[in-house]
Length: 186
Image (cartoon, rainbow, N blue to C red):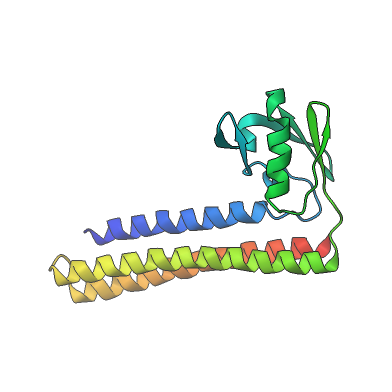
């Protein structure tokens, strides 16, 4: 395998881990309403599992309120049930064809719990980055064993892999720091 191709694949895999971590952080609520808090919750509609974003319009008309407007009135109850079973600390209220989800004030304990969850999400992201690094290092070692690259080139590329790894770990650290600050300040 071409070492430059290994580095390209490494960057792509690490970017996926970073993007996933950023998306996971967006699901943590900080006392401000955001559609991302509920959009990926699975609900049982039409005989299958679907995400809320696929069966309803999600808006935030007020800073502390999420409004869910199902496209089919038959999916109101399943959406309400899905939010309750997701166990994310939100209590939906059905208002005719609408579902209102008020965002409660965060207690100090809840903030600390959310910071722990954010740290777990960041660690999961770092695990993804380490897995991509491990795969790249293995590919370089295999390339060197097969005579595709020299031992010196292998060392140079391994240093490059480490630089990329450090950069992405730094990005996750920045995301975590921003999320922690967001959770503490509200």
